[in-house]
Amino acid sequence: MAQRKATNRARSRPRSPLRSPARKTATGHSRSRPATSRGYVRTAAHRPALDAPSQKLHKVLAQAGLGSRRTMEEWIREGKVTVNGELAVIGTRVKPSDTIRIGKKTVRWPATHRLPRVLVYHKPEGEIVSHDDPEGRASVFEQLPDLRGAKWLAVGRLDYNTSGLLIFTTSGELANRMMHPRFAVEREYAVRIVGQLGAAQIQRLKTGIPLSDGLAMCDSVTDEGGEGTNHWYRIVLREGRNRVVRRLFEALGLTVSRLIRVRFGVVALPPRLKRGQVTSLPAGEVKRLLEWLDEVRDPAPNREAPPA
Image (tube, rainbow, N blue to C red):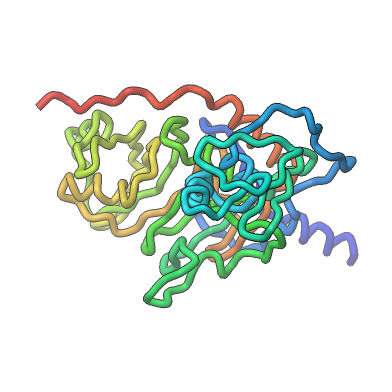
């Protein structure tokens, strides 16, 4: 009996969400409990060397898990941050020997011996990716475990009516590397539309469609079939502008009836993770993710608008 229970528990664990970009992801939902690994490890504790090279202040604050780099820059501009008793400015560089404060709170230098925590969340439709909403709608942050001394940072956003993969981390540096347009990290979506794409429309998606905020394009468009008037496609983009997928199809005169993000970089939505469930990346997979991000150094390709 004990052996049978152990086997059942092993079968119910979600598969690893970390994967190679070339491997195909699944969009089906299965019913199982998510893993509960905490997603970070500790090694022998040590303080950072006092003679370590200086770093930009907003980067250090982001690494400490206090917010994104952009938010940290805003705090600095607003006069919320001091270094050694003096107001910091954009471009201030700091070392571990410096005393950094936000208001009256002293900021601890980011520990180099601890991996950041990374969560994978299967967002359902009907939740917003924000801490505050005047309309009182449900927030994805309400589903996340509590943190002490840090905050969860969302890696990208999904709109209210979009479901699928959301990544959260305590590392502003990790979030910045995955989201910054310079690194052009892939986002993969399963898209259901009313009708079907013609060959010319698929070509337009690949070569680029001018939107109100610039040219947007897909790296790939794959026909996934469908029934009746609904048809599924799998598309890959390298940007995360607001509602960019829906706007691309709207520009073609087509309506997106369902949109699911299934991959962000090398992190895929686990097939067994049900909507509304969250799981932590184990320490080994966090290390693999960080190693992969270190290799993503090439800037985004220069994409020019197609000739009129």
